[in-house]
Length: 310
Image: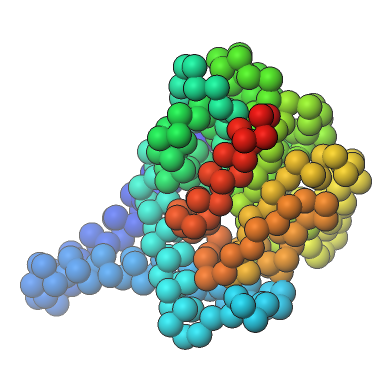
């Protein structure tokens, strides 16, 4: 079953719940229909907000220290929660139910093409905010839907390999850049372990748990287990991946992360020795792919490849 279908079913469940609450209030309590409808929708939104808030609470239990320049006051924390909530609602309720892997080629553009890899439990719909920027810059790009959802991270390498070769064939480029969110960054590194890094101009990761995340203990599937930081067997896959890399491979990586990540905790798990790092604050995990400052940083990394003549 595809992630797109799963999210459509979950969306149907939420809509049904909202309608059920509204009907009950109107039928049994005599509440005005418009008030009942608002109450039904509001109930579902409150549950979704509670899930978001719970993620922040769990992440805080394992959080790394926040540098002084990134610390937030009450207003900043409220903006952080609101931004992550809106991004999560938009991604899971609109972008993912419609998202699917695509390729867009800009003939004669001459820029390094980009491969987009989403994170755990997501699909290519996640990149809806970055894709228009790539098109505006005439950067050819392709995405991969990493399925099945609970497979091992290495199991996705074959799909990445096929898409890399298809993108290179369509553009005539010798190398591609990879932009990856969350688990997608580990998928990219696993693919490089299997197929080498010669065809990679740059790997830009957003909120990738390079050293694992404590919240992966709540994740399902082989890939969830591989991202754990504690428990039986935790960290073995990540350590084996790290041991397979040399300094030249690490130098290809730019890790963009946020000190207020609500999924990757401790947040400094996104720090990868030997890589380049760009840190942000006041941004949640899902919101990394929607925040204009983060997207500007991504586009800056891609522009630097062209200035360097890669």
